[in-house]
Length: 335
Image 1 (tube, rainbow, N blue to C red):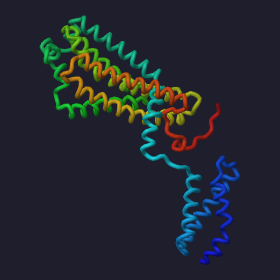
Image 2: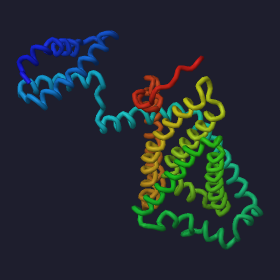
Image 3: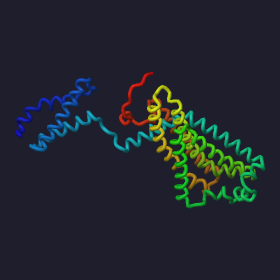
Image 4: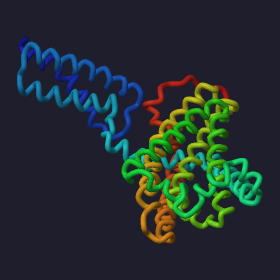
């Protein structure tokens, strides 16, 4: 290949491509199409020069030109650390905030049911007798009983891992099985309310409700909030199956399903914090007020994160779904 002739034949195309790349304003349709065409030609020219006439100066110019054109045509990609930062600072809190009506209603209903169960069990010895034998109940509720020693039954690190795994599994079940009309979510909520109600009721009947609350509150505030968020989101996904609104069911499920999958990752991190509190703070020798204070600080931080950062991100149009470039194309739908 004669390099001088090659340059003379294609210099005008390269100069035009450089001119388009130097434009500050968005290109109109015809010029954008021209940019794509010139980029493809320049990439071909670069390949030809590399294989037949590797002139260093020409290679440098074409490589730079093709790299700039590729960025203009395909767009630049955010580094992984930035995507992670955007997820935790915008997408996850926005998704939790936008689901607030579902998980707040879920939390209130579950707390009411658990409280009614606890009151019923505490006041009726016949109900207590149906739960367990008197000796078994004393073994659970007496000083040094199972309710107190549960948090020191294993080394703190392994206990934290066990608690986190179990809670993450419960949250994932609520999130993803909500697609089955929400029925598995309602069952999980009932199990949760029943467990707490039985424990509170039996300890209250033994005159030790303050001990029970002092043990469950430090980690329970954040842990139960995460479970309620997961359950509310799962119920919202189930309602999307029943009533997709003005969108097609497939599109509505795809959008809500992607947001739900992202929620699972964020809640796993929240439950990791609550698991650490349950393993290291709840059974510690700190006074009750200090342990509850730590749990309250963690809960306040999470709610502030959701209702400040999440509200701001939602106001900016963030929904918790992935970026538009990752969603794929959909057909227009009639309003």
